[in-house]
Length: 225
Image (tube, rainbow, N blue to C red; front, top):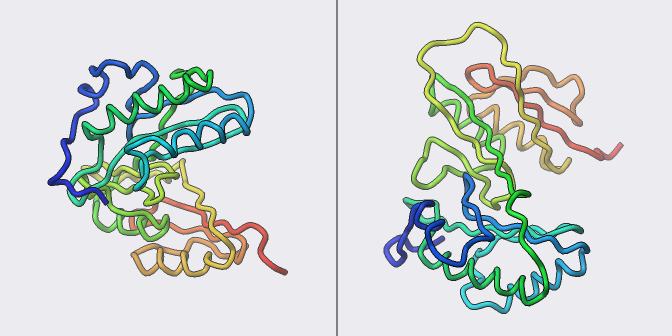
């Protein structure tokens, strides 16, 4: 985790205003760039080049390699903050330079960020359920929200609801976990205030609800017979 006292945090607008960052876009959770590679081997070559850059390491950057391209994300977490630093500006320039040296081009239009937002009357109770269910952590700087500690899954944000709603929710979340930890994950979610809706298909599937009735399914594929 980054030491908040030794870095200069910057806002997304300041990042975008810096020169040499045409490849990059700030999304909900960090600054991202997508480089088209055309093959997994070419993508692996870019990752190898990034590993040699100064300033990489210690969790920076996040890299996702696919057969058609590589997504790079820059973000830092500290005890009280979660966002971009001045150092990310230079790292972004170096990443773009490494990609260009390999003949790769960026495609900002391919970038996207996804988050799930839930309305809640009792923010603490609902957030604690989802934290236990997802295995997430509270987001530094906005502890009412949740982020994946491995920075892979969509962030979960929570908004204060003024009055209860009578209708059943029409959106639910599916959480897939390894079959040998599914039972423990369900137990943690129930201990955190959740309610069991159905275990008719357990140990492959459980349906749970948070303290205000928002539903989630815990799925485990490939359960041994």
